[in-house]
Image 1 (cartoon, rainbow, N blue to C red):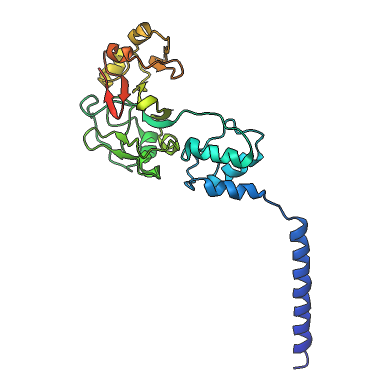
Image 2 (cartoon, rainbow, N blue to C red; image 1 turned 135 degrees about the vertical axis):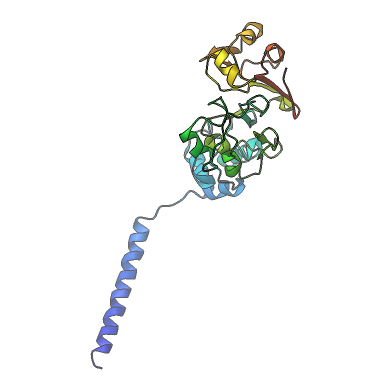
Length: 276
């Protein structure tokens, strides 16, 4: 029994010394966090969606504090109001940014893009896109399996039961970009929401030549160049057999929508989609 007391004392002494060493080391290598990071994080929406380009709201808050200016930094979920409050905390100015929204660049509804085969496998767009082009003749079109729906933290997307295409709820979409990243065919992109939700865009990503694209989908862009010729603001160009609209130049006149022979160009006005 005589050895128990010395052993206990030895262990106690070792514990005390270890605690002192750990305390000294922790103080020496302590990383002091700017208190403004916590303050900024408190006003962020805590969605941790990654739409800002950083791993969560804490990463975005740290980036804002470290940056010399807020140019190029944006919380898409919080929007302009949150960025204004953030700028006030940091004593910086924030650049004005137009509200954006997720837009599907595919108008290949069932009646326009008939099924040629049936997929029998894992019902995930990412998996299906690795195996083949899809159940229709258009290998560029939406697969409709809902990867975008699964990643949306705001319940802003659903697969329409009739068209079998993703339908985006403007009232819920925060433009976080998660759906755009999840789409293996890059059919969802973030566009300017536009005044009163007025925007014009090409709802097609088919890069095949006109005849081939039209055969695969009745709503495909056939690169006929009619939209290019009629555009008074020179906002439309043809690239890889596909019309592209420069949203910075587009004046939303809608002439290209009426001119498009396949309804590949879509005009969205106040929650109503109009196409020729």
